[in-house]
Image 1 (cartoon, helix red, strand yellow):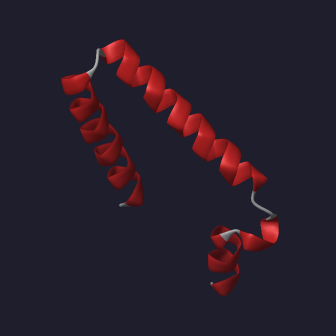
Image 2 (cartoon, one colour):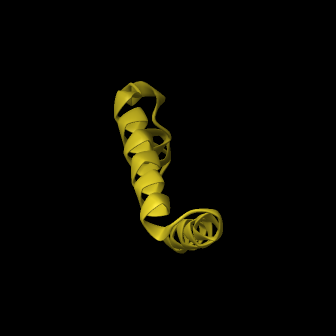
Length: 58
């Protein structure tokens, strides 16, 4: 379910962005945002990650 939410948010976000800019510019900004989120997620210490807490709770 969460994966579908990620797909929907990105598709709607890109659709709205292309109303105000070109498709190439929207994709460039979207790619930059995804890379920034991935870099930030990598920079978070492992002890702070929610996934570890969720996995160990099961």
